[in-house]
Length: 338
Ligand SMILES: Cc1cc2nc3c(=O)[nH]c(=O)nc-3n(C[C@H](O)[C@H](O)[C@H](O)COP(=O)(O)OP(=O)(O)OC[C@H]3O[C@@H](n4cnc5c(N)ncnc54)[C@H](O)[C@@H]3O)c2cc1C
Ligand SMILES: O=C([O-])CC(=O)C(=O)O
Image (cartoon, rainbow, N blue to C red; front, side):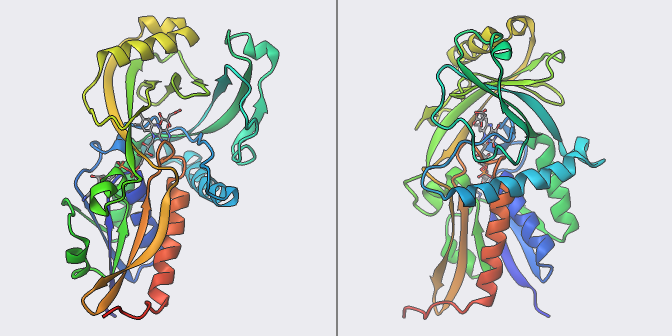
């Protein structure tokens, strides 16, 4: 039987997850990833990788819950298996603290993670100037390990990867039966989506193996995430800022804010500094359209715009993209516009 040819554009956490989901669930498809950049050079490789998303306004909570739970359950199974270390996935406990009581005190994912609770006054005493806090055990998924691990999984399932910048979807549609767009910020030029914009984020990697639990300020401008090889300190959120160079003032600010939480960080050895551009969008674009190519209609599934929650929602959104691909293969396209 002739195989269905699927192309996935993008090799960040969203594209890799989507490609693996499709190739493992639909063995009658051959999946090819085309991407300008692969790990370790994607935005996903910069991410701290904590599963702690904010609510996305305008997306039904039930759908966000499905995206988060799909990701959490998938990663939990890895975290509890002998593959955990190679895949860079593990349970991580810590605090999210707030200077003012937030409008949402119980996030939608509270019953999916483990041990979610409001912090006690005794715990909050460690964080002067903070009035409210949440204690939680969630998952940390480190892309620098996880993406190469997904690449292997994709290859095992028969998938292929090729370094290529896509500029013309019509052209691509001549060679493939289904196109899946997971190009993140690249969608601005690839599909002309002006709703997507960069939100610059800088982080510092430090050697501080004495730290075991994460601390995050509710506004995301200070966070400390202990990982396998280093501790990630962040962060910045600079809207419409395309600079990829490290800004020394940003580094100073990050170190200052994080040291207020943990003064011993001032003595920690700095291992590196990195900048990534989050694919900012008011909501994730996860939908199917039909691309008209001469006398054919080719399904084009979009899965991009994950903003600050791309790791947190990666597998759940990939599962929904898989559903859209599956449906497209069974549906008759709308009548061609001639
Ligand atoms: C400092 C920082 C910390 C973060 N921390 C977290 C965190 O703790 N938890 C969390 O959930 N999220 C976090 N994020 C957000 C997360 O990194 C993003 O949401 C996620 O990486 C988006 O993944 P993606 O695959 O959509 O995009 P990307 O990783 O940017 O991948 C896009 C892919 O598309 C390719 N591409 C683009 N255009 C084209 C084209 N025309 N042709 C071919 N290929 C193309 C690129 O080369 C790349 O392979 C953080 C982000 C930053 C910057
Ligand atoms: O805010 C955080 O805790 C980490 C993150 O997602 C980001 O910097 O985008």
